[in-house]
Image 1 (cartoon, rainbow, N blue to C red):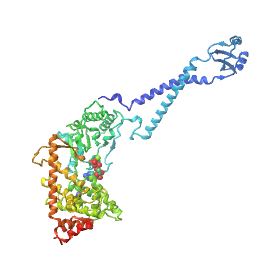
Image 2 (image 1 turned 135 degrees about the vertical axis):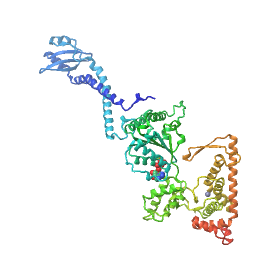
Image 3 (image 1 turned 180 degrees about the vertical axis):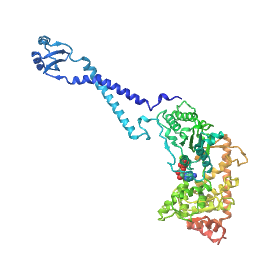
Image 4 (image 1 turned 90 degrees about the vertical axis):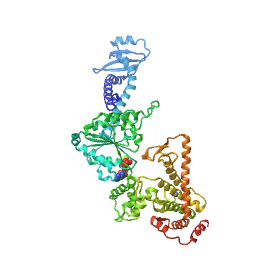
Length: 627
Ligand code: ADP
Ligand code: MG
Ligand code: ZN
């Protein structure tokens, strides 16, 4: 699409020069006579008559209401004006005095002039003021600034030159594959011959994809820090403009700058803002602006030749929403996954960030990493900072292991809610509920051991929780493991049922989680005989929680729902059975948790393994509740 006729950066300048020229001409034509008009002297009729008598009037012009006349005073002509009287002899008298009867004031001045004066001059003045103001605005913002009125459509990509970000690959922990792929690009920009000699050409673009907070932006900044070439960084949202065509103009401008500075790197963060799939609806007009911007981006990416050394990096956490045209070979043909860190990655990230704070020597990062399963890099950075804050709050000079453990809980479960007071009965129910989870987990061999159990309420709304930690991280889950997980989730509610014969709202989150797993098992993991390996659901948006859409018929949906319910129910019954068989331990542990409020995994295992003290304990607890 040719947008040249809309090039907004230039037209206004010409436009204003023309306006200024027109104004100058108008002023010459109009204002000079206007000044003359103002110099007309008003006199009364008798003065006029006496001037006529004395023969001072050289010219006179009689109009409908006024008489204009020219008087010669001290050798100077003055135009005067007087009210016209009903004087039949006037013409005669003028003739006798020797005055000639001719036009003194050109007629057009009186009418056209006043019209023009009252309209054109003010408009002209406004235009001049406007021009002056905008010029001032542009000057004060300078060249690199967001731009004034005149710089619409100029891209304001920040240019990082060597090391100005100060971030190196060593600041990015884990993500080794991503770093390797990016290192290759940096290497290419430094030694293009090495690649040219063998005939290899670099991909034009590389797309960093992964969940939020995994370090995509950080990686791009590290590339900027490592590569000794200019680095243009712009966020997709900066292309979104108020006027159609502006975003496209920005893209054009960005690539023009990049071409001039080649070899260089262009980084477009959050590219999904402009790169969304075009819907092709057309009728609604939809988002014309975004589409134009995307088209321009596609055109520009095709337009420059890769050998020049412009590499385009982009980041997104919604790769499946990108327009397929962006992903085809020749554009972003290299996809760099930036995934959530694994156990070792988490440990490294913690260490990188812990360098910035003072920590006690006893801190065990492997333990902390283990407890923070599923956390993103950004969350881990947050954990470290929380630990430091906690140390300060407690008046210590170093962050300790306990600080880290507590801050993981803060990041995962929210702050301890010190002022929420649970009644004793509530506390007891929560104790049984949490021990229910832990006991079911511990009794199923393959389930992860318990790390910590607490009944101190958190700001997230949880009244207590059981933190489970995988001893070893694994990426394949067997059907049994998933079933055990569901059983563990139902364990809390099962304990309530068993002991109190009533149920509470405390299991809402457990129910949600159990359902999610059960549903996925049947609809996506092919873990039911009935549906075999047929997908009933497809996932999109995997990095942002995931949206699923059913891909099966209505009847199958009904059946699917039924199977999910059956699966959860089976596990719920299993949990009930486990607890029934271990009811003595359930009482003992719940009682202990009730008194301690927080117990560690080791304490839990110790109590679980020691023989039951005496049977009388169990009944005592139940009496407590009713009392
Ligand atoms: P994204 O762009 O993927 O959403 P960011 O790059 O903005 O995530 O990461 C946010 C912050 O999280 C970073 O500034 C950094 O402090 C931390 N972080 C994320 N991943 C890592 C990592 N692999 N190593 C070190 N810090 C990380
Ligand atoms: Mg980012
Ligand atoms: Zn629960």
